Amino acid sequence: MPDRIQLLPENIANQIAAGEVIQRPASAVKELLENAVDAGSENIRLIISDAGKSLIQVIDDGSGMSEIDARMSFERHATSKINTIDDLFRIRTMGFRGEALASIAAVAQVELKTRRAENEIGTHIEIENSQVLRQEPVATAVGTNISMKNVFFNVPARRNFLKSNAAEMRHIVDEFLRVAMAFPNVFFSLTANGQELFHLEKGTLKQRIVQLLGSVYNAKLVPVQENTDYLNIYGFIGKPEAAKKTRGDQYLFVNNRFIKSGYLNHAIMTAYQELIPTDSFPLYVLFIDLDPAQIDINVHPTKQEIKFEDEKIVYAFVQAAVKHALAHFSITPTLDFDLDPSIQRLDAVSKPVTDEIRNATSSSHLYQTFTQKNQAHFIEQKSDLKNWKDFYEKPDKNGDEILTERKSAEVTDDYLLKSKPVIQIVEDAPLLQIHQQFVIATTTSGVIMIHQQLAHERILYEKFAGAYKGKSMATQKSLFPTSLHLNPADAVLLQELIPELNQLGYQVEIFGKDSFVIQGTPADVEQGNEKLVIEQMLEQYKHFASDVKFSKREKLMRSLAIQQSVKPGRTLTQSELKSLVEDLFTCRQPNVSPGGNPTYIEFRKDYLEKIFGK
Ligand code: ADP
Ligand code: MG
Image (tube, rainbow, N blue to C red):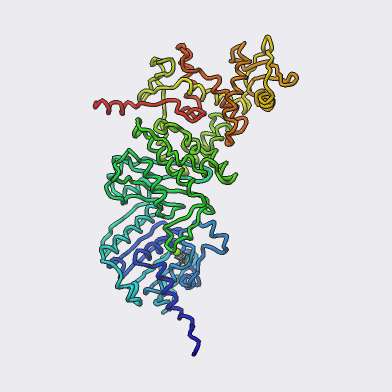
């Protein structure tokens, strides 16, 4: 018997490989558009005939290719986008496999004209069935003009599998929308059978969404923006009333790559729970950006699925970001936005895996919102704040700092600035304490109800934070230094805290075994209470003792804030009310207590009017 194994002829091997990449005309559209984007183009035109069956042409004004590169680009595994295996973990381009042009050339008749800005003359290549038919110099514009004709002309079985023109055209439009959505700063047009279907001027993401999905969404988009050290989420979601009965308008991108993820879709849908009927679908156009090393885009040849290094964190962030955006815009001031308890229990959330991730997540503002009891009332003031700790490490509201904040807001998008809610207290309007617990104050846009204790905790907390930054707290020497005897465990604890306490204006000294003497306290602590203050602070501190995500100092500040705050049941004088409100709104983060509860709820005038039908 003769041996039977032989190598496949190259063009057949290419055709088989091409089947993975080019399943239908729309797959080629996606690849060619992505190449144009990767080439840094500002204007990209897509021309289609016969639903892509006879022609798919993409004309761009990007980098173009040299004569050699033009020829090389059709080789399998030919790419300019990665060199080493490590590059796979740094992918920022849409393509990287070097398979698309080779596949296209294997199953169609291809004509390429390309020129780089530095060359006077361009290159013209014709190739079909993986065979170069001709290559010659040509006069052509800077950029690349590639036509793919008669797809599957040499693979009749596949050609027969193509669907009706209407169906194939729909796939093409889908791909076009996805790419155009992800790059609003690029001009795109789509012409089919001589008719221009889309003409998309460059603009903001919001403008692009409206261009692509229709002006019905114009006033119905809510911005989403959460920056953390681990990932950033931005984009728009539809107001609940804009939800549709069909799933269509849902776009999720990871590092600008359109992905399908039932898992993350679920995260978003549950954020809308109870806001929309179960059989309807909200719009979303969300972009998740994270370190490419945290994802594996290599899972599927057409790259619509994606694996995250830590899926659960991404799920929790996406969900919290959407809830937050909905709450932020006070779309439903009465609904409860508790995070799904199963998410809070996730290891990824409660015990992040690596130190790096732990630091990134636990210091991020979003992590803090996981502990928010009532997201609906959480009104974020500084959504571009990257790091919770930044509050304390930066100087107070001086020009520099505002500048850097502005800058980071600009980088993300101008809508951010517009989305910041501003609470402005009407100064001479009366303040009213009710039930010795809440304070009602008039704002320019409505009325707010402040929780006196939570607000005071916030004020104290920021004051303590200020003390660590150098604004030292005035100490008053006690006339009669108090001594304090503690059990051994508490004594060890207090001993550890002495340096931190000193900075906050508490002068505590060791005085023999398990004994201390309090020489002085911050000026605003009532004389005679020193001992109680320390004892209660220690009690509070022990509540936080097992909480690994806080530093010693952080726990101490929180404990003291709780301990010293004005509790419900305390009647406040007019001047106390006034300074409570004033101090609260000079805080960096007035809307949330250190423990993550809202400090106030706003009832907007327009919302109240709506309720009353006036
Ligand atoms: P990949 O995009 O994965 O690198 P492709 O087969 O799509 O692989 O393209 C191969 C190479 O050809 C690219 O890496 C790029 O260098 C070049 N190329 C393709 N399309 C263009 C274009 N429109 N403009 C400039 N260069 C291009
Ligand atoms: Mg490509």
